[in-house]
Image (cartoon, rainbow, N blue to C red; front, top):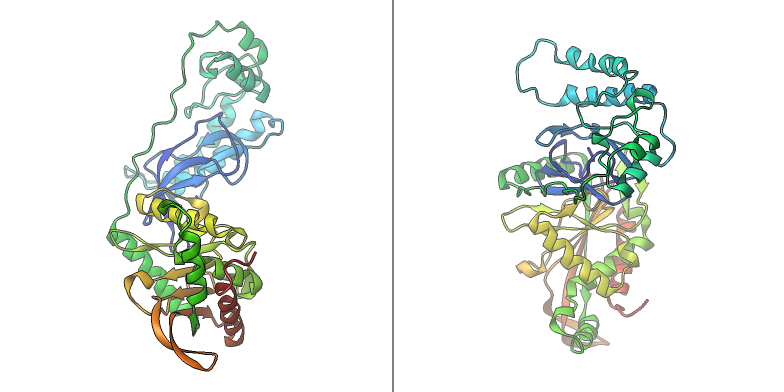
Length: 410
Protein backbone atom coordinates (compact mmCIF):
# COMPACT_ATOMS: atom_id res chain seq x y z
CA UNK A 1 0.00 0.00 0.00
CA UNK A 2 1.67 3.22 -1.12
CA UNK A 3 1.96 6.28 1.09
CA UNK A 4 0.17 9.21 -0.51
CA UNK A 5 1.15 11.88 1.97
CA UNK A 6 2.35 12.47 5.48
CA UNK A 7 -1.26 12.40 6.71
CA UNK A 8 -2.04 8.89 5.38
CA UNK A 9 -1.85 5.84 7.63
CA UNK A 10 -4.08 3.35 5.81
CA UNK A 11 -6.52 3.03 2.93
CA UNK A 12 -9.35 0.78 1.80
CA UNK A 13 -8.92 -1.30 -1.35
CA UNK A 14 -11.99 -0.51 -3.47
CA UNK A 15 -11.30 -2.65 -6.55
CA UNK A 16 -8.58 -4.39 -8.52
CA UNK A 17 -8.06 -3.33 -12.13
CA UNK A 18 -5.90 -6.38 -12.92
CA UNK A 19 -6.10 -10.14 -12.46
CA UNK A 20 -3.48 -12.83 -11.80
CA UNK A 21 -1.53 -13.48 -14.98
CA UNK A 22 -1.92 -9.96 -16.38
CA UNK A 23 1.17 -8.18 -17.66
CA UNK A 24 1.58 -4.63 -16.31
CA UNK A 25 4.02 -1.87 -17.07
CA UNK A 26 5.30 0.82 -14.78
CA UNK A 27 2.58 3.49 -14.54
CA UNK A 28 -0.36 1.18 -15.37
CA UNK A 29 -3.39 1.45 -13.10
CA UNK A 30 -3.62 -1.73 -11.01
CA UNK A 31 -6.10 -0.84 -8.26
CA UNK A 32 -8.42 1.79 -6.87
CA UNK A 33 -8.11 2.69 -3.20
CA UNK A 34 -10.12 5.03 -1.01
CA UNK A 35 -8.39 7.49 1.29
CA UNK A 36 -9.61 10.61 3.05
CA UNK A 37 -8.79 12.38 -0.25
CA UNK A 38 -11.25 10.22 -2.18
CA UNK A 39 -10.75 7.43 -4.70
CA UNK A 40 -7.17 7.20 -5.95
CA UNK A 41 -5.84 5.17 -8.89
CA UNK A 42 -2.82 3.15 -7.74
CA UNK A 43 -0.12 2.73 -10.36
CA UNK A 44 2.40 -0.08 -10.72
CA UNK A 45 5.84 1.12 -9.66
CA UNK A 46 7.60 -1.63 -11.63
CA UNK A 47 6.81 -3.69 -14.71
CA UNK A 48 6.02 -7.38 -14.43
CA UNK A 49 3.35 -10.07 -14.29
CA UNK A 50 0.67 -10.13 -11.62
CA UNK A 51 1.33 -13.30 -9.63
CA UNK A 52 -1.02 -12.91 -6.67
CA UNK A 53 -3.59 -10.49 -5.29
CA UNK A 54 -3.15 -10.61 -1.54
CA UNK A 55 -5.99 -8.33 -0.44
CA UNK A 56 -9.70 -8.57 -1.16
CA UNK A 57 -11.71 -5.46 -2.11
CA UNK A 58 -13.21 -3.86 0.97
CA UNK A 59 -10.21 -4.57 3.20
CA UNK A 60 -8.47 -1.70 4.97
CA UNK A 61 -4.69 -1.94 4.68
CA UNK A 62 -1.99 0.09 6.47
CA UNK A 63 0.63 1.97 4.50
CA UNK A 64 3.54 -0.30 3.56
CA UNK A 65 1.64 -3.60 3.81
CA UNK A 66 1.83 -5.85 0.70
CA UNK A 67 -1.31 -5.99 -1.43
CA UNK A 68 -0.07 -7.94 -4.47
CA UNK A 69 2.91 -9.87 -5.81
CA UNK A 70 4.49 -8.98 -9.16
CA UNK A 71 6.93 -11.27 -10.95
CA UNK A 72 9.58 -9.69 -13.11
CA UNK A 73 10.21 -10.94 -16.62
CA UNK A 74 12.86 -13.45 -15.53
CA UNK A 75 12.26 -17.20 -15.52
CA UNK A 76 10.03 -18.18 -12.63
CA UNK A 77 11.67 -19.75 -9.59
CA UNK A 78 10.65 -23.29 -8.54
CA UNK A 79 7.12 -23.22 -7.18
CA UNK A 80 7.95 -24.97 -3.90
CA UNK A 81 10.44 -22.23 -3.05
CA UNK A 82 8.26 -19.32 -4.23
CA UNK A 83 5.05 -20.35 -2.48
CA UNK A 84 6.16 -19.94 1.16
CA UNK A 85 7.43 -16.42 0.46
CA UNK A 86 4.13 -15.39 -1.08
CA UNK A 87 2.21 -17.03 1.74
CA UNK A 88 4.31 -15.17 4.28
CA UNK A 89 3.27 -11.90 2.67
CA UNK A 90 -0.35 -12.97 2.87
CA UNK A 91 0.14 -13.63 6.59
CA UNK A 92 1.47 -10.08 6.98
CA UNK A 93 -1.74 -8.74 5.44
CA UNK A 94 -3.91 -11.05 7.51
CA UNK A 95 -2.32 -9.77 10.70
CA UNK A 96 -3.28 -6.18 9.99
CA UNK A 97 -6.71 -6.56 8.39
CA UNK A 98 -9.81 -6.24 10.58
CA UNK A 99 -11.26 -9.60 11.64
CA UNK A 100 -14.97 -10.05 10.96
CA UNK A 101 -15.56 -12.67 13.67
CA UNK A 102 -13.92 -12.94 17.06
CA UNK A 103 -11.05 -15.45 17.19
CA UNK A 104 -8.81 -16.36 20.08
CA UNK A 105 -5.59 -16.64 18.05
CA UNK A 106 -6.10 -15.14 14.55
CA UNK A 107 -2.40 -14.73 13.86
CA UNK A 108 -1.69 -18.33 14.74
CA UNK A 109 -4.44 -19.51 12.38
CA UNK A 110 -3.07 -17.37 9.54
CA UNK A 111 0.44 -18.57 10.23
CA UNK A 112 -0.68 -22.12 9.54
CA UNK A 113 -1.36 -21.25 5.92
CA UNK A 114 2.24 -21.48 4.63
CA UNK A 115 2.44 -25.06 5.88
CA UNK A 116 -0.72 -26.00 4.00
CA UNK A 117 0.56 -24.34 0.81
CA UNK A 118 3.93 -26.03 1.05
CA UNK A 119 2.35 -29.44 1.59
CA UNK A 120 0.00 -28.96 -1.35
CA UNK A 121 2.68 -27.95 -3.85
CA UNK A 122 3.87 -31.47 -4.79
CA UNK A 123 0.34 -32.69 -5.62
CA UNK A 124 -0.69 -33.20 -9.24
CA UNK A 125 -3.04 -30.38 -10.08
CA UNK A 126 -4.82 -28.64 -7.20
CA UNK A 127 -5.90 -25.06 -7.78
CA UNK A 128 -5.10 -22.50 -5.08
CA UNK A 129 -8.08 -20.77 -3.50
CA UNK A 130 -7.06 -17.39 -4.90
CA UNK A 131 -7.38 -18.63 -8.52
CA UNK A 132 -3.67 -18.47 -9.35
CA UNK A 133 -2.76 -21.22 -11.84
CA UNK A 134 0.83 -22.47 -12.02
CA UNK A 135 2.28 -22.14 -15.51
CA UNK A 136 5.56 -21.15 -17.15
CA UNK A 137 5.77 -17.75 -18.90
CA UNK A 138 5.89 -19.56 -22.27
CA UNK A 139 2.72 -21.48 -21.44
CA UNK A 140 0.93 -18.30 -20.35
CA UNK A 141 1.85 -16.54 -23.59
CA UNK A 142 0.71 -19.55 -25.63
CA UNK A 143 -2.58 -19.74 -23.71
CA UNK A 144 -3.29 -16.09 -24.45
CA UNK A 145 -2.58 -16.58 -28.16
CA UNK A 146 -4.91 -19.62 -28.29
CA UNK A 147 -7.60 -17.97 -26.19
CA UNK A 148 -7.47 -20.78 -23.61
CA UNK A 149 -8.20 -20.11 -19.94
CA UNK A 150 -5.50 -21.71 -17.81
CA UNK A 151 -8.12 -22.52 -15.18
CA UNK A 152 -9.71 -24.98 -17.63
CA UNK A 153 -6.51 -26.96 -18.29
CA UNK A 154 -5.28 -29.75 -16.03
CA UNK A 155 -1.54 -29.37 -15.66
CA UNK A 156 0.88 -32.28 -15.80
CA UNK A 157 4.00 -30.38 -14.79
CA UNK A 158 5.63 -30.12 -11.36
CA UNK A 159 3.07 -29.16 -8.74
CA UNK A 160 0.29 -29.30 -11.33
CA UNK A 161 1.84 -26.59 -13.52
CA UNK A 162 0.36 -26.18 -16.99
CA UNK A 163 2.86 -26.95 -19.75
CA UNK A 164 2.93 -26.29 -23.50
CA UNK A 165 2.03 -29.92 -24.12
CA UNK A 166 -1.07 -29.56 -21.91
CA UNK A 167 -2.19 -26.57 -23.96
CA UNK A 168 -1.71 -28.34 -27.28
CA UNK A 169 -3.79 -31.27 -26.01
CA UNK A 170 -6.58 -29.05 -24.65
CA UNK A 171 -9.77 -28.72 -26.75
CA UNK A 172 -10.17 -25.54 -28.75
CA UNK A 173 -12.22 -23.02 -26.78
CA UNK A 174 -15.37 -21.32 -27.97
CA UNK A 175 -14.28 -17.78 -28.93
CA UNK A 176 -15.18 -15.38 -26.19
CA UNK A 177 -14.09 -11.95 -25.13
CA UNK A 178 -12.71 -11.97 -21.61
CA UNK A 179 -14.61 -9.62 -19.37
CA UNK A 180 -12.48 -6.81 -17.98
CA UNK A 181 -12.41 -6.17 -14.25
CA UNK A 182 -15.62 -4.53 -13.09
CA UNK A 183 -15.15 -0.77 -12.94
CA UNK A 184 -14.98 0.45 -9.40
CA UNK A 185 -17.67 2.65 -7.97
CA UNK A 186 -15.53 5.60 -7.02
CA UNK A 187 -16.36 6.93 -3.58
CA UNK A 188 -16.16 10.65 -2.97
CA UNK A 189 -14.18 12.00 -0.02
CA UNK A 190 -16.19 12.92 3.03
CA UNK A 191 -15.72 16.44 4.31
CA UNK A 192 -15.31 15.22 7.89
CA UNK A 193 -12.62 12.69 6.99
CA UNK A 194 -10.74 15.16 4.81
CA UNK A 195 -10.85 17.84 7.47
CA UNK A 196 -9.47 15.39 10.05
CA UNK A 197 -6.59 14.49 7.73
CA UNK A 198 -5.83 18.15 7.01
CA UNK A 199 -5.95 18.92 10.73
CA UNK A 200 -3.47 16.13 11.48
CA UNK A 201 -1.05 17.23 8.75
CA UNK A 202 -1.20 20.92 9.63
CA UNK A 203 -0.89 20.25 13.37
CA UNK A 204 2.20 18.18 12.65
CA UNK A 205 3.58 20.94 10.43
CA UNK A 206 3.13 23.66 13.05
CA UNK A 207 4.40 21.39 15.80
CA UNK A 208 7.54 20.14 14.07
CA UNK A 209 8.51 22.77 11.48
CA UNK A 210 10.06 26.10 12.49
CA UNK A 211 8.55 28.28 9.77
CA UNK A 212 10.11 31.36 8.24
CA UNK A 213 8.02 33.70 6.10
CA UNK A 214 9.02 36.13 3.37
CA UNK A 215 6.86 38.26 1.06
CA UNK A 216 7.70 40.22 -2.06
CA UNK A 217 5.59 42.46 -4.37
CA UNK A 218 6.15 42.02 -8.10
CA UNK A 219 5.13 44.36 -10.93
CA UNK A 220 3.45 42.08 -13.49
CA UNK A 221 2.39 44.66 -16.08
CA UNK A 222 4.73 43.36 -18.78
CA UNK A 223 4.01 39.62 -18.41
CA UNK A 224 0.24 40.24 -18.30
CA UNK A 225 0.45 42.43 -21.42
CA UNK A 226 2.49 39.73 -23.17
CA UNK A 227 -0.01 37.06 -22.12
CA UNK A 228 -3.00 39.11 -23.29
CA UNK A 229 -1.43 39.59 -26.74
CA UNK A 230 -0.67 35.86 -26.93
CA UNK A 231 -4.18 34.85 -25.91
CA UNK A 232 -5.79 37.24 -28.41
CA UNK A 233 -4.55 35.00 -31.24
CA UNK A 234 -6.02 31.83 -29.74
CA UNK A 235 -9.45 30.25 -29.27
CA UNK A 236 -10.92 30.73 -25.82
CA UNK A 237 -10.40 27.07 -24.92
CA UNK A 238 -6.65 27.33 -25.60
CA UNK A 239 -5.96 30.54 -23.71
CA UNK A 240 -3.53 30.54 -20.80
CA UNK A 241 -4.44 31.94 -17.38
CA UNK A 242 -2.03 34.00 -15.25
CA UNK A 243 -1.91 31.04 -12.86
CA UNK A 244 0.17 29.17 -15.44
CA UNK A 245 2.68 32.06 -15.48
CA UNK A 246 2.98 31.75 -11.70
CA UNK A 247 3.53 27.98 -11.90
CA UNK A 248 6.16 28.34 -14.62
CA UNK A 249 8.14 30.96 -12.70
CA UNK A 250 7.90 28.95 -9.45
CA UNK A 251 9.05 25.69 -11.04
CA UNK A 252 12.01 27.28 -12.80
CA UNK A 253 13.02 29.21 -9.69
CA UNK A 254 12.98 26.02 -7.63
CA UNK A 255 15.16 24.33 -10.25
CA UNK A 256 17.74 27.09 -9.77
CA UNK A 257 17.49 26.89 -5.98
CA UNK A 258 17.37 23.15 -5.24
CA UNK A 259 17.92 23.71 -1.52
CA UNK A 260 14.21 24.60 -1.36
CA UNK A 261 13.03 21.74 -3.55
CA UNK A 262 12.92 18.55 -1.52
CA UNK A 263 12.17 17.04 1.86
CA UNK A 264 13.26 17.11 5.49
CA UNK A 265 13.68 13.47 6.53
CA UNK A 266 15.63 11.87 9.38
CA UNK A 267 17.01 15.24 10.51
CA UNK A 268 18.52 16.03 7.12
CA UNK A 269 17.52 17.67 3.84
CA UNK A 270 16.89 15.28 0.95
CA UNK A 271 16.82 17.03 -2.46
CA UNK A 272 14.00 16.16 -4.84
CA UNK A 273 14.75 13.98 -7.87
CA UNK A 274 13.03 16.63 -10.03
CA UNK A 275 10.82 19.67 -9.68
CA UNK A 276 7.47 18.01 -9.05
CA UNK A 277 5.32 21.00 -8.24
CA UNK A 278 2.45 20.35 -5.86
CA UNK A 279 -0.63 22.44 -6.69
CA UNK A 280 -3.13 23.16 -3.91
CA UNK A 281 -6.60 22.37 -5.30
CA UNK A 282 -9.72 23.30 -3.34
CA UNK A 283 -12.52 20.75 -3.53
CA UNK A 284 -16.12 21.76 -4.07
CA UNK A 285 -17.29 20.06 -0.90
CA UNK A 286 -14.53 21.64 1.17
CA UNK A 287 -10.92 20.69 1.84
CA UNK A 288 -7.74 20.73 -0.20
CA UNK A 289 -5.63 18.15 -2.05
CA UNK A 290 -2.12 18.70 -3.42
CA UNK A 291 -1.44 16.68 -6.57
CA UNK A 292 1.87 17.28 -8.34
CA UNK A 293 2.82 18.38 -11.83
CA UNK A 294 5.86 16.21 -12.49
CA UNK A 295 8.99 17.84 -13.94
CA UNK A 296 7.15 21.15 -14.06
CA UNK A 297 10.34 23.11 -14.74
CA UNK A 298 10.65 21.32 -18.10
CA UNK A 299 7.12 22.09 -19.25
CA UNK A 300 6.19 24.95 -21.53
CA UNK A 301 3.42 27.38 -20.71
CA UNK A 302 0.78 25.55 -22.76
CA UNK A 303 1.69 22.21 -21.19
CA UNK A 304 1.51 23.72 -17.70
CA UNK A 305 -1.93 25.17 -18.44
CA UNK A 306 -3.14 21.85 -19.80
CA UNK A 307 -1.68 19.99 -16.83
CA UNK A 308 -3.29 22.41 -14.39
CA UNK A 309 -6.74 22.03 -15.97
CA UNK A 310 -6.35 18.25 -15.98
CA UNK A 311 -5.25 18.08 -12.34
CA UNK A 312 -8.03 20.33 -11.09
CA UNK A 313 -10.68 18.43 -13.04
CA UNK A 314 -9.55 14.99 -11.88
CA UNK A 315 -8.99 16.14 -8.30
CA UNK A 316 -12.58 17.36 -8.08
CA UNK A 317 -13.98 14.23 -9.71
CA UNK A 318 -11.89 11.75 -7.68
CA UNK A 319 -9.61 10.55 -10.49
CA UNK A 320 -6.15 11.32 -9.17
CA UNK A 321 -3.26 8.87 -9.46
CA UNK A 322 -1.07 7.71 -6.62
CA UNK A 323 2.09 9.07 -8.26
CA UNK A 324 0.53 12.54 -8.31
CA UNK A 325 -0.03 12.54 -4.56
CA UNK A 326 3.24 11.10 -3.28
CA UNK A 327 5.81 12.91 -5.43
CA UNK A 328 5.45 16.65 -4.74
CA UNK A 329 8.77 18.33 -3.90
CA UNK A 330 7.35 21.82 -3.16
CA UNK A 331 3.87 23.36 -3.19
CA UNK A 332 2.29 26.38 -4.85
CA UNK A 333 -0.99 27.85 -3.63
CA UNK A 334 -2.83 30.57 -5.53
CA UNK A 335 -5.63 32.28 -3.64
CA UNK A 336 -5.84 35.33 -5.88
CA UNK A 337 -9.18 34.27 -7.34
CA UNK A 338 -10.68 34.40 -3.83
CA UNK A 339 -9.83 38.07 -3.47
CA UNK A 340 -7.04 37.91 -0.88
CA UNK A 341 -3.93 39.95 -1.61
CA UNK A 342 -1.42 37.64 0.09
CA UNK A 343 -1.23 34.19 1.64
CA UNK A 344 1.06 32.95 4.40
CA UNK A 345 0.79 29.20 4.00
CA UNK A 346 1.82 26.21 6.09
CA UNK A 347 4.56 23.93 4.76
CA UNK A 348 3.22 20.48 3.85
CA UNK A 349 5.55 17.93 5.49
CA UNK A 350 7.98 16.50 4.60
CA UNK A 351 8.42 19.28 2.01
CA UNK A 352 10.40 22.36 3.02
CA UNK A 353 8.80 25.15 0.97
CA UNK A 354 5.43 26.57 -0.05
CA UNK A 355 5.04 29.47 -2.48
CA UNK A 356 1.87 31.55 -2.33
CA UNK A 357 0.31 34.01 -4.79
CA UNK A 358 -2.36 36.57 -3.96
CA UNK A 359 -4.65 38.65 -6.12
CA UNK A 360 -3.24 40.93 -8.80
CA UNK A 361 -4.14 44.47 -7.68
CA UNK A 362 -3.47 47.91 -9.09
CA UNK A 363 -1.14 49.96 -6.91
CA UNK A 364 0.80 53.22 -7.12
CA UNK A 365 4.24 52.22 -8.41
CA UNK A 366 7.41 54.13 -9.19
CA UNK A 367 8.78 53.44 -12.70
CA UNK A 368 11.93 55.26 -13.82
CA UNK A 369 11.40 57.91 -11.18
CA UNK A 370 7.78 58.55 -12.17
CA UNK A 371 4.73 57.55 -10.17
CA UNK A 372 2.20 55.44 -12.06
CA UNK A 373 -0.36 52.67 -11.43
CA UNK A 374 0.72 49.11 -12.12
CA UNK A 375 -0.73 45.61 -11.62
CA UNK A 376 1.13 44.03 -8.71
CA UNK A 377 1.03 40.56 -7.17
CA UNK A 378 2.31 39.67 -3.70
CA UNK A 379 4.39 36.49 -3.67
CA UNK A 380 5.07 34.77 -0.35
CA UNK A 381 7.36 31.98 0.75
CA UNK A 382 6.89 29.71 3.75
CA UNK A 383 9.98 27.60 4.39
CA UNK A 384 11.38 25.11 6.89
CA UNK A 385 14.06 26.95 8.87
CA UNK A 386 15.80 23.63 9.60
CA UNK A 387 16.59 23.25 5.89
CA UNK A 388 17.20 26.87 4.80
CA UNK A 389 17.55 30.36 6.15
CA UNK A 390 16.05 33.67 5.11
CA UNK A 391 18.89 34.50 2.72
CA UNK A 392 18.17 31.40 0.59
CA UNK A 393 14.48 32.21 0.58
CA UNK A 394 15.11 35.82 -0.50
CA UNK A 395 17.29 34.62 -3.37
CA UNK A 396 14.50 32.31 -4.57
CA UNK A 397 11.94 35.14 -4.54
CA UNK A 398 14.34 37.40 -6.43
CA UNK A 399 14.86 34.72 -9.09
CA UNK A 400 11.12 34.09 -9.26
CA UNK A 401 10.51 37.79 -9.96
CA UNK A 402 13.02 37.81 -12.81
CA UNK A 403 11.47 34.70 -14.36
CA UNK A 404 7.92 35.95 -13.92
CA UNK A 405 8.71 39.17 -15.76
CA UNK A 406 10.25 37.23 -18.68
CA UNK A 407 7.69 34.50 -19.45
CA UNK A 408 8.74 34.25 -23.10
CA UNK A 409 12.32 33.24 -22.16
CA UNK A 410 13.13 29.56 -22.94
